[in-house]
Amino acid sequence: MNTGRWAIGGLVAGLVLNISEAVLHGVLLADQTAGAMTALGRDAAGTPLGLGLLVAVTFAQGLVGIRLYAAGGGSAVMIGLAMWLLSAVYSAAYFFAGFPGLIPEGVLWWPVAWELVQYPVAMLAGARVIASKASSTPPRR
Image 1 (cartoon, rainbow, N blue to C red):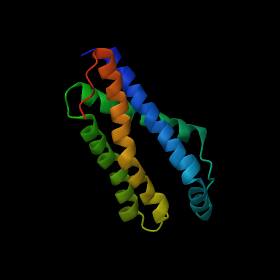
Image 2 (cartoon, rainbow, N blue to C red):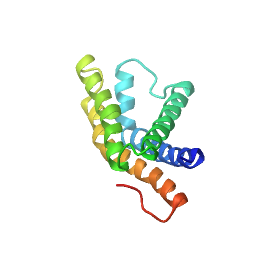
Image 3 (spheres, rainbow, N blue to C red):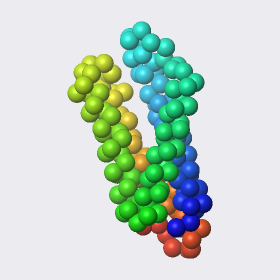
Image 4 (tube, one colour):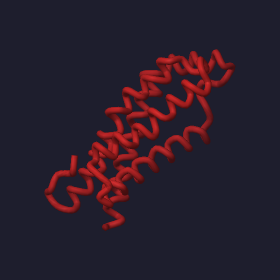
């Protein structure tokens, strides 16, 4: 397996994930999230360190997902769905069950629906990079 090929594909997948997360949280849910943070007595903006951590972890998700894909771990869509389950669904269920009422349900559950599309699309984008560099064969969907 070509390390450079899957790393580039993973970074592309991570970039798709990060852009999608920025649109979701920075635009679509910005007002609801700011309201929830204000109600908790917190700064809605967060910290540069926190934002950097989120961006880094999201790139890591892209790299891990495409590494699994490159190793023959399944189709890009199936890996994306597994990542969605382990990330989005788990996080929302954890906060919903462990900290009931802390986060408004819209802010908690909209990302789960959004990311159901986001993760498979990101994995397909990264897989496309691998396939385009390897040959003209399209990625395993």
